[in-house]
Structure formats: C-alpha cells, structure tokens
Length: 157
Image (cartoon, rainbow, N blue to C red; front, side, top):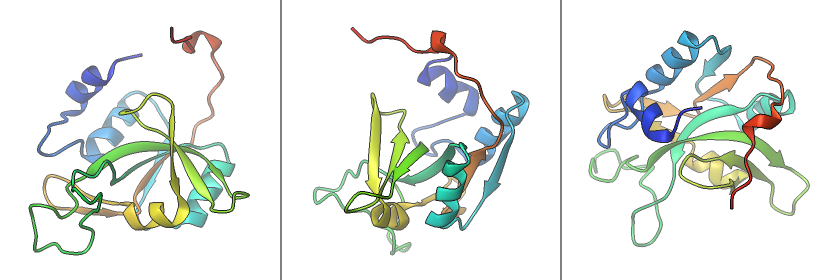
C-alpha cells in the first residue's frame, strides 16, 4: 500500500531511464511475490496467462508526446524519438468477443482501466531500458494466487 512516488523511489525510477525491469523483478522477489519473466511473448501467450488469472506487467510505448500521436518503433538511428514513450502497465484482462478484440490494463498514470486493441498492443509492446537493452514483447507474469481483500477497495468521492 505505497503511493506511486514511494514505489519510484524504491525502484530507482528516473525521468531519464524510467524503471528497469531488473528493479521490478528484484522488488517482487524481495517481497516474496512469485513471478516469471519472458521476452518475445505472443498475444496468445498473454491470453493464456490472463485466462489463468495471472496479471502481466509489461513495458510498452504509451502516451505519445508527438503532435501526430505516433511512436518511433522502427528507427533506432533517431535516438531522440526511438522508444522514448516507454511506460509500465499491468494487463489484467481482455475481450475477444468485441468486433475489435482488446486488452484491459491497470495503468499507474490513470484512474480506472485503460484498453488497447490487440493489433495496437502487438505493435507497441516494446521498450528500451536506460542502458539501451530492448525488451520486445516482455512480460512479468505474477504467478502466485491472491485472495480478494475488500478492505483494499475504496470509494472515490
């Protein structure tokens, strides 16, 4: 039950480098949270993890600062814009029955849930850490079971 600033301090998050995956995994391990981490996950892999009741933390390109809302996913030679919109989210669900299938996220930058359509998620599911390592379709799956705690929910007024 920490606020975002406390987590950022614990994880060594900086505006320049963001939060490295290794810091998140070390924090989970230190706190006894069972997880697996994988690169090159497919959307089908993600669906299977969610169907098992396992949320997946993932870095992706989000909240574009470009005037046209675009993301530089393909031109590493442009270091000013290549994979600079990295952001961690937690994928918690999906809807395959919609006309356009989508995934549902808890996003620390938002109140409530956010969505991305499957094709857009597949395209934007890539990030780079401060040292230049690429994380392509990377996910940290929380594998342990949890119990519902009604005291953890609060009404917003």
